[in-house]
Image (cartoon, rainbow over the protein chains, first blue to last red):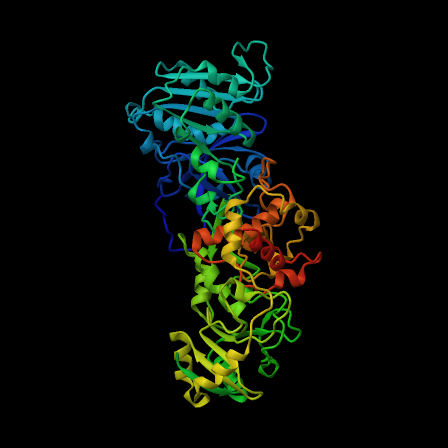
Length: 282
Length: 339
């Protein structure tokens, strides 16, 4: 982990301009931001930023775009709190927000080179994983990885995020994409119905050379891990991104602490053996 | 360590001189509730046998609420103004359990990213400690590696020799420079005399081995031990606010006009339900016993694992002020006997 130590105050954001805003679902929206000087965020897939709206507050949001996309970065945000609701309802293209970060460790993709990749995304968990998926699928990086499997589940047919991109994954010959909905609300849906764990038995991966990367709601991890263990998946090949309330992002304020670990700094990405040692983690 | 003697009048003269030099003096208030900026030097109390202030001296260097920047908004445009936390301070009359806290929390503010707000205040402060003779049932400084006469964290430690004279033990260069600046106020002291006084000050009655506490916590996370405490604790969080070493904070915006405001760093506490509540509704510490377990573990295990320091100075404030009489000293003493 390389700390980018700022000489200025740790809590001082940079201004970024909203350049795209698109509605995905009733609750989720997609945003693109750019810095006025054209500089890159210089993030790793799996890292997050502290997004602030002046007068409203600050919230941690995972970065959804791949670092191979230059000059801008993308966030997928669910409207649940003060900041996110204000972002959805009151800010339009051209508005400025504050950005601190990127923070956190991100996925150790250097270690994944040569492996097959199994992505398991539940709901909004696709947002941070999309950063790594698009990195893996980027034409300059694709040959560094083996097969790519994407498992993506939603509550119902109205909840798909990044629908166009999901379709492009379905159409790619070098990606196996499996979709499921917990509850079918579209009579034309021909795909799987059931929770995300029901997809795992359908995938024919090689446990000796596959890395599984999981992100989803907290309840999902335990069951996905169980299902992977049923397939004799190695614990050290399972990675997950944890959700915590990261307030300062720099390992001081204490909100994201699990045992002696600050998730905002040592996480949010952990391998399963580490998570097993952290009580209260999942 | 160099030693000097200063008279009561000399101390007053010293504080007057420092005020003239532009230092702000912080000392226990008249009713002993907290450290306040001194307006009248005659009011500074110099009694080593006073009870620790209700709220610790922590807030002099890490204020309860502090702005981290100001902003102005106009339509889509935002302007941000940074803050420079300067100003020289003298923290006067800290008990060793208060002075030591700064050395301990210095580590969390500097382990990777540096927090300039804390650091600047720390660098611009001179800490004058006062050896303590107040010992009650809640004190346990000797059990966490300190003592009523500990020099940890002080630049100078005063020892009360008589009603009118104090021994001066110089601990840091900063403290030494102060003595050199005002040679007329300090006489060369006899180390034996203050040593006699120091030796005569005993320790608090409560004693336990903090290493034993950690040993037990290392192996007992899923335990019933904290359930009964969780049932009693009302989650008011006063323990985290009066504590000299608790350092968690929140970051919030305050708009005082529609178009301008400031971003604040405010103290927060792990005993609150909202502390770990995610926007999604998920809360990793959803019941009070988990939050109390977090507090004990953070103080006696997690911080030790990470920074090799116990996150507690044994001042006993959290227990003295608890509305439902939860006594952390008693709890960790019991834990130390379990391993």
